[in-house]
Length: 86
Image (cartoon, rainbow, N blue to C red; front, side, top):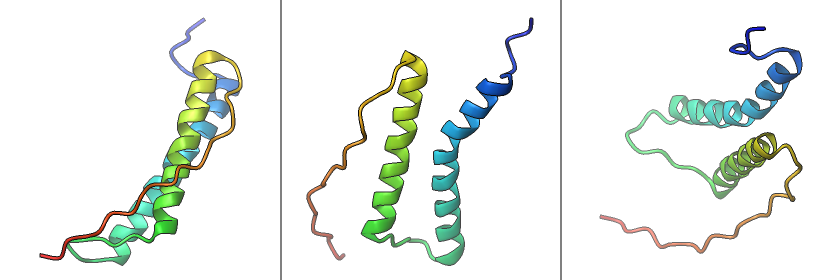
């Protein structure tokens, strides 16, 4: 049997795992289209959504690699940094 192509359950799992990256890609594409400027501005909520999606992707990938369930994703509070205006 050829194992180079994912089958039924494997395909569904792969699509589910990659869905987090699709969300990030679509968000970034939308922002690139909406903000037609050399610099982009993101809100804290948008950055938090990107971070959460990446964390979920990592958690799913680790579950697939280990074959066990990982603990819940925890929210990380990042300290704010002052932006410099040049």
